[in-house]
Amino acid sequence: MNSVAATRRAFDDDTDVPSASIADEVAAIARKDLAPIAPAIDSGTIYPADLLRRLGEVGAWGSHRPNNGAAEVCGATAFMAWCQNTLVWYAVNSSNPALVADFADGAATGKILGGTGLSNPMKSFFGIEKLKLKGRRVDGGYVVRGALPWVSNLGPDHYFGTIFEIENQPGEIVMFLADCADPAIKLQPCTPFLAMDGTGTYSVQFRDVFVPNAHILAELAGPFVRKIRAGFILLQTGMGLGLIRDCITIMNEVVEPLGHVNRYLPQQPGHFQDLLSDLELETMELARDPYNADDSYWRRVLALRLHIGEASVAAAHAAMLHCGARGYLKSHRVQRRLREAYFVAIVTPATKQLRKMLADA
Ligand SMILES: Cc1cc2nc3c(=O)[nH]c(=O)nc-3n(C[C@H](O)[C@H](O)[C@H](O)COP(=O)(O)OP(=O)(O)OC[C@H]3O[C@@H](n4cnc5c(N)ncnc54)[C@H](O)[C@@H]3O)c2cc1C
Image (cartoon, rainbow, N blue to C red; front, side, top):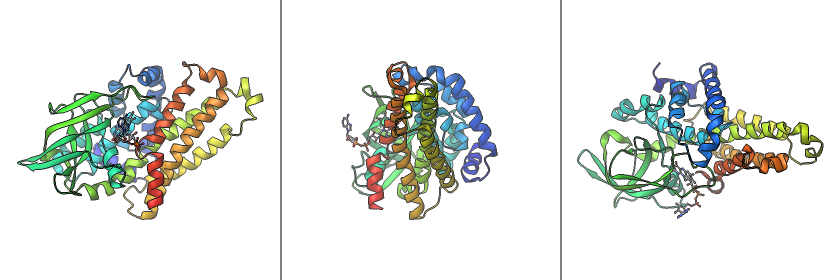
């Protein structure tokens, strides 16, 4: 089976058999190769391109399961995993045969790396901000200009999916793949973040970039986004679920020395274990049907995403309180998990946007 078919099958399939072995391989790479470099990724001294390609080779980007294995070890890598997964998700769902031929397998196997610039469009669809990219039709494609403030998992040979509005035609939107190797695209390094500095995140300027027809994901971006939006959000769940799992591990690690006093804390590892089981169950149930167009399904996806963001912050906060002074050391991973947890809650759709979307739905 090629990776496009595998991607579709893994998302649709009820059986966990093929993905379970991929999950094991991802977890093994995460424990062996990712754990030692997680602090360097966190501080921004490493962008782990080789590791991302290796994860692609074992099928991580073709399986389309939320990537908990990487998230148990490193939130930044889990975020890059999501970025890469969105690139594949866009390519395999496109009905442009030239684009599918050029990108779907390459991205699913990790030969092509990249991500997504949908934060601004996602916010624009819900009346939070205006679209930042504008395009005009020319022979063989479009010319696009504008700037996006943050796009992650990028490098000089990477691609990402985003959306522009056709000039003077409000509401006419086109989704495409941007090619970072194009000299008219400028990647500007961002000022340091609280976490996520090794995620290849740049501000991206489009200086009259020619986008060929072969790079158009969807001439009508509206229906395309409605098709891919649940998958886009469900794939983010891995970042939070893996992080919560590690926070439970951290709390359990200090039971022996500190359990006699930690038992007075209101939130215990068992509480988060129950919560995690519920969230995982709901994730897997919703992930079986990512093309479901019902409003009630969409509301469940939004509610799950909101709960995972809030539970991530709560679990990391509790883990910090359980660790006490030993967790306050820069060398302890719990302070990194706490910083990473806030990202789960603020990356688009952010907690406030999700609450607005649920209020408006
Ligand atoms: C580390 C990191 C990686 C990200 N990666 C991606 C990605 O790969 N793809 C993607 O599409 N989005 C990415 N984002 C954006 C992210 O998904 C959110 O959109 C962002 O965190 C803000 O969301 P918000 O809903 O809280 O908006 P708010 O912060 O409430 O508002 C966002 C708007 O406020 C303004 N603004 C905010 N901060 C500044 C600032 N420092 N200077 C000037 N103006 C500012 C801008 O107009 C911006 O559009 C990334 C953000 C971060 C911090």
